[in-house]
Length: 472
Image: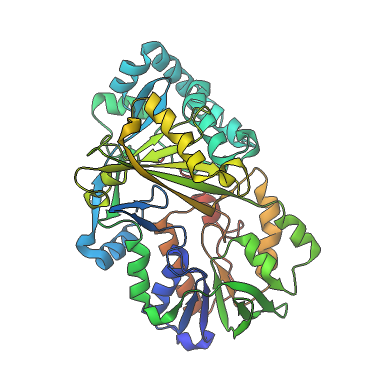
């Protein structure tokens, strides 16, 4: 490995999982670096909130065992504090809760044989059809899964999650998250075979004992807290057309830069550049949108609601998309005789949900959950509302036509790399972000500055895009 000093000091913008992953691998490689974070705490949108003896996360976070080396790294860092959890999920449909991952006995019992036979016939027919190049998400799922499964599991939930019709979304939003949702998987489960083929559908994941924020906190400690400056909001980024030369912090202090890794949302990065990008790049950036989230945690006077990791609600009559019970990830998340439910409301900053008062949010969730029997109103001890911006990017069809020129422009800055969900405009998991951080540092160590990770022209962009669509 070449000497890390050849790139000079590394400035990392943002102390979420993406920035801390880059900092962690920079520290291991011996790079001098500083992580700048706007908030008082590190973790970005990956946080654990404490409320009167309860703990809950800023979303139904978990660590998936999809990259063996990164799983080993996290287990080495957290030790006994991270554990493998097995907890299935359920989908609420027409008054019944359907197990997910799907099982034939459960589907037959709750939806009936006619539904199953119709769905299986459509899936089999779809699998035998030619694999055409679909132009949008709706076309893709109708062809791949048939109308019955598409409408039951995918289209309504996707509309709610993204806030745009599925026909406007790219097929890439699905990624590989529903591999196995086909006739072959049903039959393998029915016959008790094919466990290897359906492994990705298992309801298991890793989770820290004291909440998901243990992961960024541990990464931050491994980076060395003296390398992290919280309360340092980036307000401008100065460049000379060839390289990033400095960043302005809190609207007043300039920090000279030699090499930069940005995890800022792509629109924010472009908007902070000084001088600003060419007009055509600015116009393209205006097409990019992000989905935001409002979370409502209900603290309940009962020991448990269910054994499920999450409940999914595709029905548009429910304003929330997903509910999870933190205690089913770790018992320490709630007092022994109490539990909590956390609902996710996909929204846009400034819309009616985002602007609703906390008491109004409570009334959006409590009555429906009482009606379907998940809780009694008298069990609600308290509630807490959290608002999260830039939860994930909205990846519409033909988005590559927008992103390619933007990343081509950013590649013109020889000392800039980007990584992270909002920065590279793709949906990625924690293990992906750890891998990206490692890849960036190894790339810099080999002297390949200027390759902007997340560029749609690179293979990894299309490999793992997609929101948490019925994620087990």
